[in-house]
Image 1: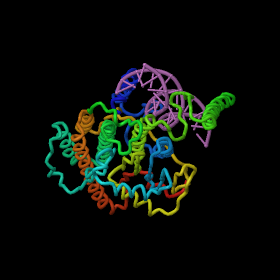
Image 2 (image 1 turned 30 degrees about the vertical axis):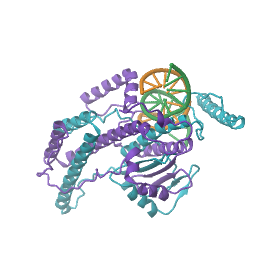
Image 3 (image 1 turned 45 degrees about the vertical axis):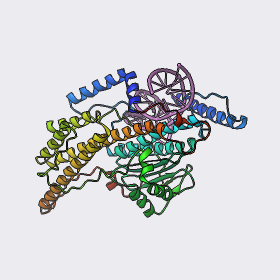
Image 4 (image 1 turned 90 degrees about the vertical axis):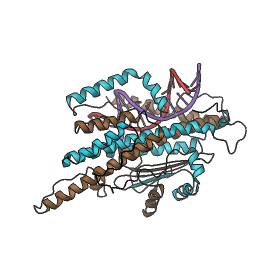
Length: 217
Length: 217
DNA sequence: GACTATTTATAAGT
DNA sequence: ACTTATAAATAGTC
């Protein structure tokens, strides 16, 4: 998926350049008067309240529409639940089944199955205990030197910050986390696609698309 | 002018008509030798197996992507579960929540309104939409040089990471966020205490519309 | 709530 | 797979 995007991006080199230049200019001149092109969005929490609410409405309807289409076109079971920040609940379930039933099935499925082709995760990660003292950092695991440094830098600096800075910084870290998540999810999606071809077909009849894999990546 | 507007609407209407006619024709004449225009799809189960599988993959990716974006952009909780016809499970849960948690919340909310597409909402409002791009990292805002560097470091490096690294890194960022939050909370508590005597309302962090929406529209 | 300009998603084609 | 043509989604506006 990311590769597809990459290709497309190459095609749109011109546009990209244009955008990057604009962004660079905006940074230099200070944020503010820059107006985004229509239809283009950064992957981060929308700051403006009104805008965020409007977008939520539009995007929510689009998401549900897509979910519905997937269920119909591909004969898949789909369950979708969305809570607005205000706590309102919106849900969609493809067939006659209920959300309870579909979610229930998730729990019943053993790890082996889930592990194989699942896109996202109920992995143990992501639950943060705010137990540690800042002076006593958890040992900076070696993901890469850069990352370790970045993390230390963040946390050390944090102690010196004003409220405003803190608030802003929290936003930044939140955004960074969002970016990381998105990338990971896309990678998972990629892998899932790749592995799909290697997966045996439980109920094959006639032609099978999974039988024609020509190696893995 | 009004005529222009009318013209546009007519064009749209034509598209709709065309589509509907095509669908109707397909039904009456049976399955087809008919070649659809690119990008155009009838809302019905795809008969061709290969095609169905291919589109399932693509659309599934798109759906999850959008679900993720909605959660990030609009700060909403999202749970999405998809079963392929083969019975494989794909799921996505927005943040630190689990499917079970979100599901649990569903049960607690009584009144349900179901619309045309099987979409249920606890709110009279309609539905909505979403979309996003992975290659587009959030712009590095400058809070301090250190922070900017850290953030950029994070995001740049992230693109090169393996899955294992990504997972680990996500964990680190999550922890960092937790740390920042804890610090901010402590500071808020301090300030609140201090200023409580002055009977002043120091700062509000919220631009969370969940807090401001008291229920009506 | 509707309109238009753009971007994104994606059905077909190679 | 990779590319291209089209449709759909949607951000910015009024």
